[in-house]
Picture 1 (cartoon, rainbow, N blue to C red):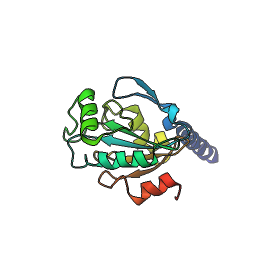
Picture 2 (picture 1 turned 90 degrees about the vertical axis):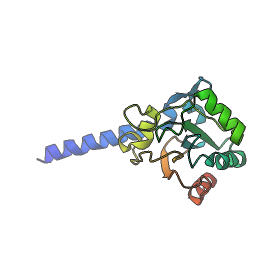
Picture 3 (picture 1 turned 90 degrees about the horizontal axis):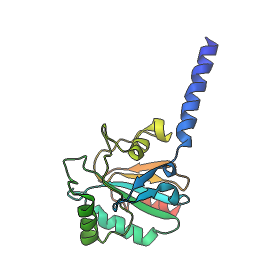
Picture 4 (picture 1 turned 60 degrees about the horizontal axis):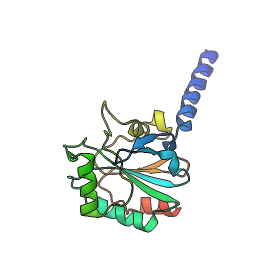
Amino acid sequence: MKTLLSIAIFLASAVTVAAQQKTFFDFKTTDIDGNTFDLSSLKGKKVLVVNTASRCGNTPQYAQLEEMFKEYGGPGFTIIAFPANNFLSQEPGTNAEIKSFCARTYNVTFPIMSKISVKGKDIDPIYQWLTTKEENGVMDAPVKWNFQKFMIDENGHLVGVVAPGESPMCDKILNWIKGKN
């Protein structure tokens, strides 16, 4: 019986270690213009990952995200938006339409990726990692709505999540960016 228990503990530890070895920086994605975007290019930066939509009550958060990017973006911090149409078809546009909307309406200058799925059977591998403890080694954090914010540290580890309706300029995120956590 002790042998079986020891084997079970070993296997559980191995799964946890394997999950923790994979980081956000191990993924590649596609940007809004169709180019490959290697997330390893962000090593050493804190990254705020946000699933976005153009026709949502939370869409004005684009303005706050842009303000944050202008103030804190640079060698130590960035924001990445992943448009998604998973909630009430609030992001129906093409990548070109999304890019135009973001530039025209909110003057967005932070990186925007191609539209993906952030939940369900067709969930993008990045969001599978972000939302599943077995993958990220930290927590289960299913996406509840547009503009859920994931905080990734300089080593590519998930360190926190902020609810969709909460401002990107909330204390939790600002203190994290400034290193006050």
